[in-house]
Amino acid sequence: MAGLNETPSGERLHVGFFGVRNAGKSSLVNAVTGQDLAVVSDVAGTTTDPVRKAMELLPVGPVLIIDTPGLDDEGELGELRVKKALRALDSTDVAVLVVDAGKGMGAVDEKLVETFRKRNVPYVIAWNKADLVPEGAVAETPAASDEEGCRFANVATSSTRGVGVDALKETIAALGEKALEKKKLVSDLVGFGDVLVLVVPIDSAAPKGRIILPQQQVIRDCIESGALACVTSVEGLPAMLKSLKEPPKLVVTDSQAFDKVVAIVPEDMPLTSFSILMARYKGTLKTQMQAVDALDNLTDEDVVLISEGCTHHRQCEDIGTVKLPALIRRLSGSNPTFKFTAGREFPSDVGAFRVVVHCGGCMLNDREMQYRAEACAAQGVPFTNYGIAIAKANGILERSLSPIPK
Image (tube, rainbow, N blue to C red; front, side, top):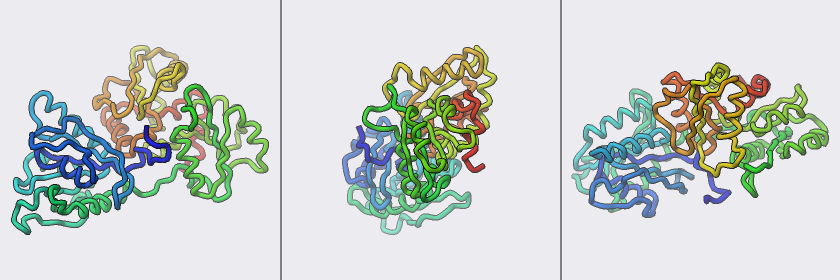
């Protein structure tokens, strides 16, 4: 298990290495990371599944490196590998297209560049094996924007001789600068010296000895802003509010405790949830707000997808598989069928679902969350959020959104 003080994967720059077989992707990945992250072989198709590694990459900082299978793989199994490689692009912040400098760009490479541009994924073309071509044959270019506004660059590299590796890392850092911009979870909602009350239930589903990631992140963001984070359980909330000399600037609760917390917190006291803050943080809040009304009109024939961005041991009162379905049945007055996904598994075809209800996505980066929301929108499927759904079921959606700037 990752250390508790490590940067979570959702906060790391996702760097994906793409290209055809034997272009030298895995060798270049190993050269960039300084370790044998990927298996290297002269046999085409050695990398069969995307390989992911969280690490520190100077001068970028915390990154998630993704080494993908060759996009020219063949056969029935090869098609599955290509599909997985392209799926990795959905979470990629900076793409590295590795091209054999001696062979030049082929149709697969050119099609991939078109995909980068269409999705506005910053990319660098690493002209690998540059030591085997005449000097000056590769025209290197610094990071710039193409005619469509997509950021790109060209770098000459040789994974075997270490040529251009530092330049490639610096280019990745330059292209990933926007994705690394500091975002705000709650620090723009509270100021220096303001009191923020965080309600953290301790129940059978809470990880023993620690609190879950969104709660950690809100506390960290609060501290950085100079605000005062006061953390309590639901049971301790009345005493906490009574002990404060002045009302808190904001109360943030775990969505599962909305019904209990709203009965304690006065109506004139701003209230929201960690899940709603995460939806705003990931850039999908507006879409999810507009989609939640779909839960009102479900029928017994409808299918609802409940999706979580992480994988964990299911408890008897698990939020995703037990509590949320029960709440949706009560809200809609119907008995729809529920399907579940977790981790990186998310269907590209969501047309069979009447609505998708997603967790806050703390373990997923912004691009992955936005891909999921956009995939649903493109297929006309409403995409909403645990916290928004629970707030609506408790009749407090408008109140829970009121602290968020429109």
